[in-house]
Length: 411
Image (cartoon, rainbow, N blue to C red; front, side):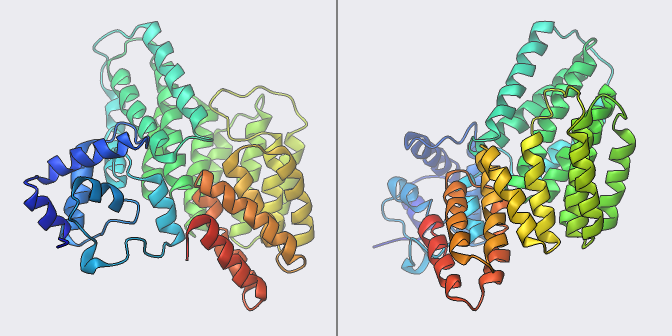
């Protein structure tokens, strides 16, 4: 007879921790890359399942049945319940080594450590190795599994902070590398899995590190990311405040690409706030910045000439200028190769064509859905409700639901 999870575990003579260890072994034996996930995190999840505050998704039941063959979902329910976009994304991302709340506490709780007096030396070879590992993790951001990359980033953040507290020399170099990885962790939390609280915590840590290093370009970039969190959350005054600080912090000369990106950020946030005239003006300023020469540091790896067209398309779309948006977005799609950003552009193109050329809209949304199935990205998936609203009441709405169900298992 099928048992509940608690009954099956107790009958097997296992503690929650022992079950957690067996589940992690089964997961890794199946070839899933979960990084250095700890059994303690898995044990907490099992406890929540047994208390009834959450329940295992369809992703979990094959592993649970492997370890506890007589376990079954509550009330013998469907092992494959309908999924929402949110559960699709989180089921694919999986459990990170630190929960969101723990990551926030860890990030915020370590800011005060930067003022500790150095107690030991730090070898140059150690710094080079740390910088290289940070760089490798940043490179994996584009195509790696989000939970694995975030786990690496958070672990590197803690490592860098421990180096910083004990280094007599090279503190600025250590602080820059650690700020980079804190910024990366914040981007993953906010953009990839819609966790603004953890994202803001990491950005706060990154900002303190950039100030420790007296690196104004890096600090300006971090402040602009904090503006994204405020603006996307509807706090337009707060976003404007962070952007003012970013603008005052950014160097006036030598780094035109950073200035161009800051104009793009201001444009997108103005569009979200319902100010299309300011948004379009800022995009013109962003284009002008592309014509100037200047080098950018290694950490500035999320923006170049190919991204300006996608920003412009998003802004035009928000301004209700679908034809102009489609032109910019088509240009962007020809240039962008990164999976996540291609998905964003595809969904924006689908929206742009939804009222005038729905067949073409369906082609773009199919490509976008295929891309987010390969590499989940919440900023792309969040475009779907706008497309659904545009197609509501038309035969294409049913077609869209079918494609979501076929490609994401959502329905």
